[in-house]
Figure 1 (cartoon, rainbow, N blue to C red):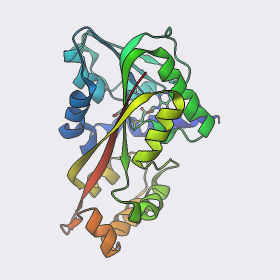
Figure 2 (figure 1 turned 60 degrees about the horizontal axis):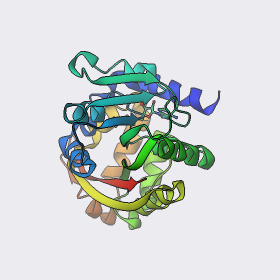
Figure 3 (figure 1 turned 30 degrees about the vertical axis):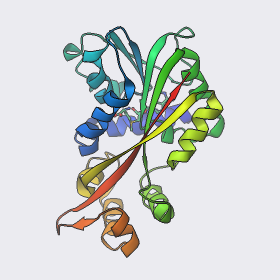
Figure 4 (figure 1 turned 120 degrees about the vertical axis):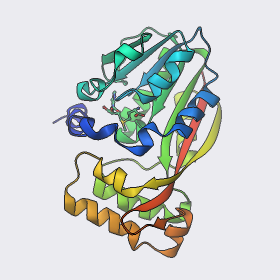
Amino acid sequence: MDKIEEQKELWRKRAQRYNNLEWVKKSNVLQAFMLVGNFDKDHVVLDAGCGTGKVLGTVAPYVKEVHGVDISEEMLSQIDLSSIPNAKVSVGDIGNLDYPDNFFDRITVRLVLHHILDDDDLMRVLKELYRVLKPNGKIIVSEGVPPHEDVKKDYEEVFKLKEKRRVFMPEDLVRLLKRAGFRHIRVNIIIDEHMSVRNWLENAGDLDEETIEKIYNMHKFASPRFKEVYNLVDKGDDILIDVKVALVTGIK
Ligand SMILES: C[S@@+](CC[C@H](N)C(=O)[O-])C[C@H]1O[C@@H](n2cnc3c(N)ncnc32)[C@H](O)[C@@H]1O
C-alpha cells in the first residue's frame, strides 16, 4: 500500500467517531485560528486536510469562500455542507493541489502535518501550500506539541502505541515553514485545559481495548514530572490533562 492509501485507510476507520473527540470541537483553538488569521469578508481560504470540517466551518462565516481538500472521502462525508453555503470540498492530496499559483488569501492546516511521515513529502506539501498562497497571504499551521522538552520522550512513547507519526516541537514547525519560503513566522501557544484521556482514546476509532488500557496506564502511572507538566488530574474513572497546541503563522 502506498503512503496515501495508508492514510486513506487510517481515516476510513477513524471518520465515524472523529467528531466525538473533545479536542476537535473545543473552542479555544478554533478561536485562536480566528484571532491569528486576520480573516476578511473578501478572503478565499484553503483548509488543507480539512477532515470533518471543524476549522472550515469556524472560518466560513467570516470570509467569502472556503475550500476544503482532504484525501479521505469518509472524513469529508461527515461535513454538513448545507450549513456552510460558501464551502467547497474536494478529495485530493495537499501535496499536489489542483489550484493555480497565488490563489488563496489564507491557508489553515490543523493536525495534518504530523501524519506526513516522509521528509520529502512534508516539504513537497509545504511548498505546494506556498505556491497556492497569494503573496502577503498567511498560512496558519496548528499541531499538538509536548508540554515540555523534559517529557518529549514520554510523549513519543505514548503516541508510538497509537499511530505512526511525527512529533513536532514548536521550533520544528518554525524551521519547516522557513525552509518552505515563508517569512514573519510567529508561534502562538494555546493550552487546552482538562482534556479527557478516556474521551481521546475511546474515540480514536482504531484502538483495541488492550492498547487503550496501556496508554491510559502510561498516564496513570507516569513520572511526577510528566504529571506536573501535564497538570494531570486522576479522577478515578478518567484522567484529565492540559494539552499544549502550537499555532504557527507565516507570510508568503
Ligand atoms: C487529524 S485529522 C485533522 C482534520 C482537520 N484538519 C481537523 O482539524 O479536524 C488529519 C486529516 O489529514 C488528512 N490528510 C492526511 N494526509 C493528507 C494529504 N496528503 N492530503 C490531504 N489530506 C490529508 C486525513 O485524511 C485527515 O482527515
